[in-house]
Length: 292
Image (cartoon, rainbow, N blue to C red):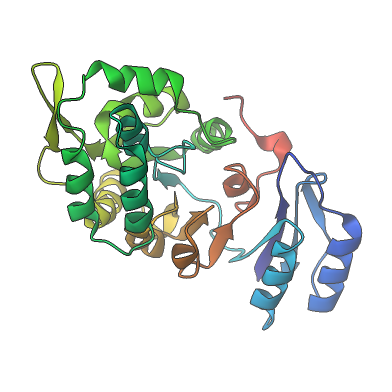
């Protein structure tokens, strides 16, 4: 048995019952269950429809997301999340670079790296080198003035933890930011790279080893082993090429507002919804959300 979930942007609330009935009837699905009126609904399916991706494409044009998952085991026991452009709206290194006067140059490298066009570690070192000499106090300024959270993140973590889940933040970014983001959103732990500082200024380098694609996979392996759960019990979310390893290994890997080349390699793609979509596809209704 499978479950099809159709999702709208919560700010738009443009999911209509007529569309759901038409889709359910065409696919021989079960009764429609509303998880949040106008935003999310689901229905059971006996098989994965052969035209799922064509329908997905059609729904994209309507501002809607479609996710089809096996009914068994879809509610997960652990969240493994990327930070930049996933739990927060920005790329921290781009914001630091902008303060250093090299914003456009660094942002272009970031975009190529996240799209998988550049080696992640080499691109990280190249960008960090351009920050050399920047006053370390700028980190706190960027966090306070420029970093905003992706909608739905606090509810996602609070709800999963209220149901016995564990939340880990794993980033190719920097601990100077993950520490604060993890604390603000309620993550149980975080991992990231450490910016090296000399005399209250950025040294233009990071501590080794560098946390990249492989380190995110290792985080998945290590944390699940420590918790005594299977990798299938994990829902992972990210947007860049360095997230693909953990997205492929997790029980459910979600490409959230991802680069096209990244989304194309994932079965679960959320382009219109926010982070609450990760709750809806697990079968949580809005009434089930825990207070953040």
